[in-house]
Image 1 (spheres, rainbow, N blue to C red):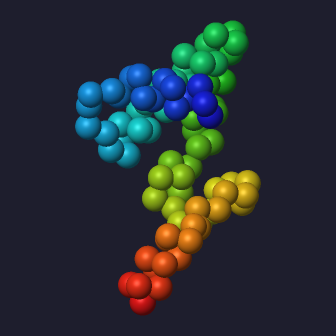
Image 2: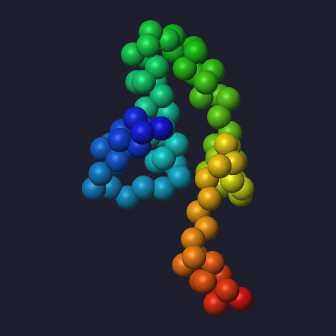
Length: 83
């Protein structure tokens, strides 16, 4: 993930970004990243076809591992204040 984030920031610096640009950047990253490992374009395309971008970008829920927790004392206080 760190490799992608570095690529993403360098590729999109000084530009506006949105979900479409994120998807495009991720596809370009995977194509370049896996071509270095001598994977065929068909294999890269198969990997890209497996990704559910709608769920990944617009879906609600926790990360796939279920281990990230973004709750902080400040976020909890903000929720309490809003309620």
